[in-house]
Length: 108
Image 1 (tube, rainbow, N blue to C red):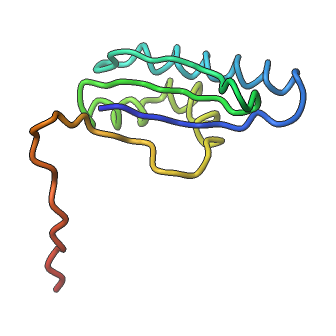
Image 2 (image 1 turned 135 degrees about the horizontal axis):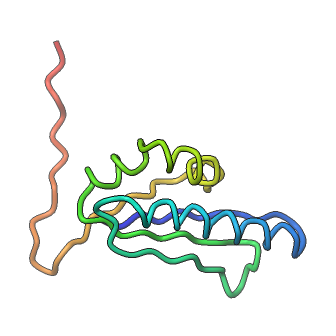
Image 3 (image 1 turned 30 degrees about the vertical axis):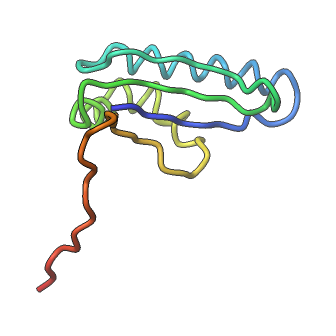
């Protein structure tokens, strides 16, 4: 599972420096959780105030458990809550994998 979070730093070098520190702190907290595979902090080359935090997890359950851990709630969730409001969780898809089908749930 891949998680992609984008962030806007705001104006000025001080805002970017602060966001970079916060993103690396968040990544360190996530890295310590079971199921974490890899992660990176990156900065957009064309829009320097746009930042990216990507993480890769063994499965969606590992990611959800990481977010609910006490240490991550303290060290990462305040920063993650500043992410651009857009879908962030992705599942890898192979060339010939069958894609999930949207099937409405039955309501009672």
